[in-house]
Image (cartoon, rainbow, N blue to C red):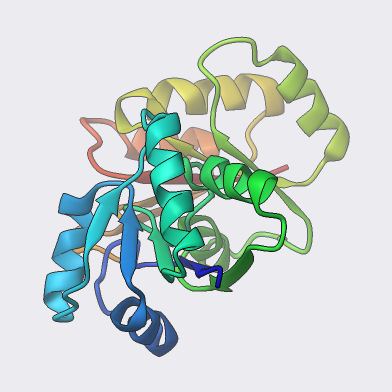
Length: 221
């Protein structure tokens, strides 16, 4: 009998931001597939979850995918988690799911929803988000087509950015879109959580100095 694959969202920072259902599934499955078992290990230890873990990351090859497939073929139930947030969103989980389904279309995929840095930032921004675009990490090069498309769409867009490139990227956004409203969530749900909101020119001034940690940017066009 084919096992089930659970896509389990985990906290983006604060370990209490996990659902009761997610905790139950993590305790019940046979194996937990994690992007980095050391990172996920902190969460599992905190909740006293002692299940076998296996790493799957962007550099994992065909052999690791086949290993996971064989576990499912043996009837093992598997939980897929990422380092933080929802698997498959800007992480290699989506490639694994696509691979498994290409060989086993009948594989039962069960999403266990929860924390996501994007929806967390949007919820606190106060910007119009009935429609929005998530573009993952802002590309370092060849942004022209993307910028044109975003201008035509005229809707709120959000992206991840590394702290050392944040100011440069914001200045580029200002050049292309003008002095628009922007929201920045740094280290969301963590001890040093900081929120910045306002006209992009003013926010850039507030960011003077070295920025550290995980960053989510929301731009209201």
